[in-house]
Amino acid sequence: MILLCNIRRRKENESYCSERLRCSSKEAFAVMKEVVTNKKDAVLGLATGSSPIGLYKNMIQDHKDNGTSYAQCQSFNLDEYVGIDRNHPESYWTFMHENLFKGIDLPEDKIHVPYGSTKEDCEGYEKAMENVSVDVQVLGIGGNGHIGFNEPGTPFTEETHIVELTEKTRSDNARFFDNDINQVPTHAITMGIATIMKAKKILLVASGANKADAVAAMVNGPVDPACPASVLQNHEDVVVVVDEAAAAKLAK
Image 1 (cartoon, one colour):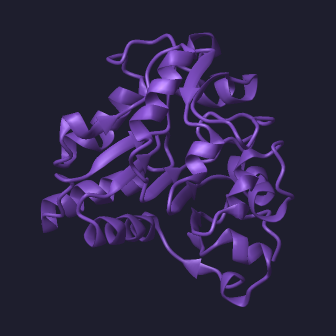
Image 2 (tube, rainbow, N blue to C red; image 1 turned 30 degrees about the vertical axis):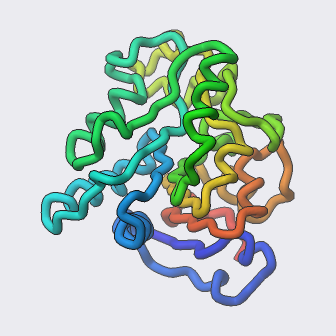
């Protein structure tokens, strides 16, 4: 694995980020562990998909082995599909309970996952976050550079909103729906880019050759809504953990 310490400084060609450090999901977990250890009531921004599963497994194992507690924490998830029940096997509510929440002591009433299809639902989620500051926001990255479900072209000023998913995103996610794109919801509710950028620290995890173009555009390309993740170059504290395949097109 490769750890890119800070993509803003890498963009500026500072030497410590030109060195590739061997790492794994344990290093991603180390970032999370430091946050939770230093702040018992940390606010955690969480993501779904295959990328953070290794991180979540480490969180569960550490909770079992070392007693690291999340009892005073609260969480806010990035996004959720529109039009499927929360108990649907592929809902992100279900994903988070199956892959993390069932294995740690985060109180159920401190768990927040966006839900709904209206402007009022979006405003309600923003309101729930207005008095908190996310200490660490976990992100993946889509093959087209999306973060959350903020598709290419999304304004950087956007807050929580309803988005129509691109065919690329729906095709990428079809593997979770019996490889049938027709089963993949067409819309989602997502934190906006402006909401994501309020986090104190961002931890982005990506793997696989299918993410190589997006990772390269995020790190080396211009800051442009055509690649939503490129906005992270403007954040002061971003840790990016990628494997060799996902890093293959980064400038040396």
